[in-house]
Image (cartoon, rainbow, N blue to C red; front, top):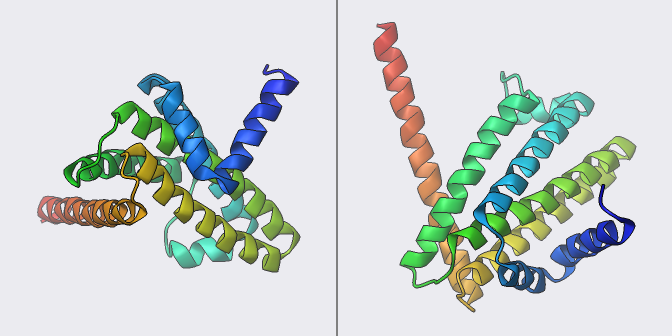
Length: 200
């Protein structure tokens, strides 16, 4: 079990991710984490995310029913879907950035994405707690978490690819997101065509 000082250091690092994401991203890159550690942290973040979403679906089912109508949202199902999209995003963001003139290491891309998502999952837990206390507080927490996440992704991408240009980081995320959505749409369309053919 980590010592009290280690837990405090981890807490401070998490808070700095919110208040000073560039400094945290630069610190992570400087530590040269291996891919294995990054993937392990990402699996942990995906698992916790699925767990929290499952709790949220239980506490405020009407919200999740409006987002996923007619779909039974379980922690395992959500973890598989969100985890797959997160892993795809690591590849699309990193290699899109390289095509736009960025430079960096893929292991840093994994670790930066994993750490930021871990922090976002912790914030999701706090958001669910506030939602349980007061829907208004939960709504405010949702907006705050979105802003923190968007800012974090842009700055982490900037550091990850050594752009030193926030605009190029935003462009990278936009192209990567558009490409991911297009790819996912094509896959779902092919699955639908395959299912229809099989049914026929």
